[in-house]
Length: 234
Image 1 (cartoon, rainbow, N blue to C red):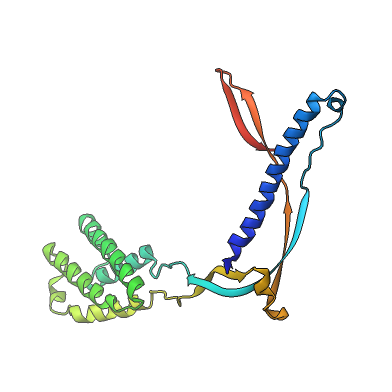
Image 2 (image 1 turned 90 degrees about the horizontal axis):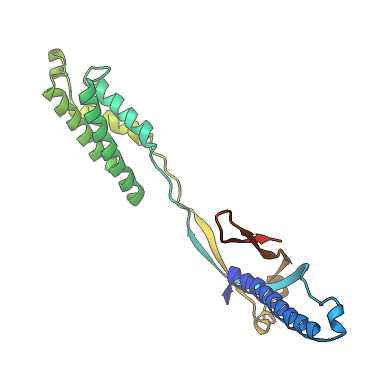
């Protein structure tokens, strides 16, 4: 049993090696022609691979899978803006002084990053409740330090009610995606004696067409002296 990519890769590599062996043989023939009184006037034979078409029979043995790439459950910028707006409104204001605003935004940015990591690991919104509690407490603490809450609202503010409302809003903003499996490797049976034991309908025939594209060294003299050598397609 071998990985399909390794099997096909080894075939392509073998064809490349065959071309190398052919070129080495061409050099040896060219040297013989150069030494011969008559053959030196003949063109040196050289084999070039134009196209190679292969039909490769294999049988699928096992499939290796991996989890799909990670995703972002939170749009951090929009999420932070929503939390900030709700917290500011909860203390009866439409905006905050610049210094206070920057402090609160930095706090939310750091806490949102932590929340996103917890959601990725747990796959649940359990961490939202603690996030809301901390965010509301921080907002009220800063608001009281800077006297941002009007006296008539002081007694009406209920942290638990604000936390519950904020939690309901934020839970709806979190995007979940089912963890999916995606194909990583195909393990195939390629040995002839094992393929004979497989049912005909179990065999897979892979058609491969390989075309040669040669590379050659291009050398040019630099203006400041020296040689600039590059490997370019023929």
